[in-house]
Amino acid sequence: MEPIPFVEPSLSPEDMATLALAKRTLETQPLAMKLAGAVGAPIERLMSKLPAAAHDTIAQATRRALDKSLQAAVATLGAPYLIADESAAVSGRALGAAPRDWLHKVAVATTGAAGGAFGLLALPAELPVTTTLMFRSICDIARSEGEDLRGVEARLQCLAVFGMGRGVQDEDADLGYFIARGALAQAISKASSELASKGVAAHGTPALMRLMNTIAARFSAQVSEQVAAKSIPAIGAVLGAVVNTVFIDHFQQTAHGHFTVRRLERRYGSEAVQAAYRAAASSAT
Image (cartoon, rainbow, N blue to C red):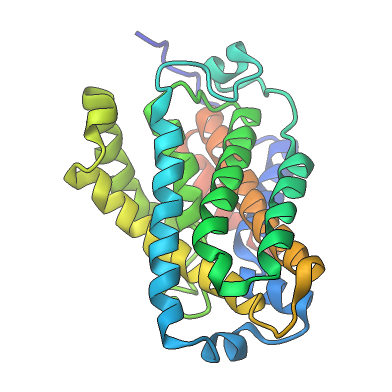
C-alpha cells in the first residue's frame, strides 16, 4: 500500500510562479495562430479550401495514428517506459532528467520535410509516425515531471494530451484547461480500470473506445489545421519541416503545462492548485 502523500496548505512563491508559467502555456495562443504565423496565411481560410475528401482522410489517419500510440502505451505495461530515474517516478516529487524536446523536434521535422513534397497523399503514412514520435516526447516530459510511467493511468494521461488542444472549428474553443481536462477525466478513469484488470485484452472495450473517440475528435481538429498549413501550393520540404516543428512544439508545451499542474497537485492537492491557477489569471494574460 502506497503511503498517503503529505499535502501542504498553500503554494510556495516559486511553485506559484511555476504554475503561472504553466497557465500561460496552457491557455494562450492556439495552434491555428502558431501555424498561421509560420506559413503566413490564416488557417481558417486554408481549411476552407481543403477538398471534401480530405476530412475523411484526416479522420482515418488520426484514428490510426492514435491507435499506434495506444499500442505503444500498453505494449510494455508494468515495465519502465522512458523512465530515467525510477525513484523520482515513484515518489512523484523528485524530478527526472530533463526531457529531450529538441531530439523529438528534429525527428518530427524530418517526417514533415518528407511529407511536405506530397501533401495530403503523404498523411496516412506520415501521421502515425509523427504522432508516435510526439507521444514518446510527451511521455518523456511526463517522466521529467515525476509521473510513474509503469502505470496505466499515467500513460493514458500522456495520450490524453492529444485531446487537450483547441481547434478553430471546435465548439468548445473557449474552454479552459481544467474544463477540457475534466471532460476527459471520467473516460481516463474507466479506461485505466479496464486496462489494469485486462491488460492488452482491454483494447476495444467500451471504456477505452469512448476515451479514444473523445481524444480523436479533438486531435483530428488539430491535424486538420496542420494539413491546411501544408496545403499551400509548392510548400516544399523546408516549410513542411517548419509546420511539423510548430505542431510538435504545441503539444510539447501542452504536456509541460499539464504535467506541471499534476506534479503540483501531488504536492499541494488538486483544490489548492486549482484555486491558485485561477488566482494566477493576471499573471497568465
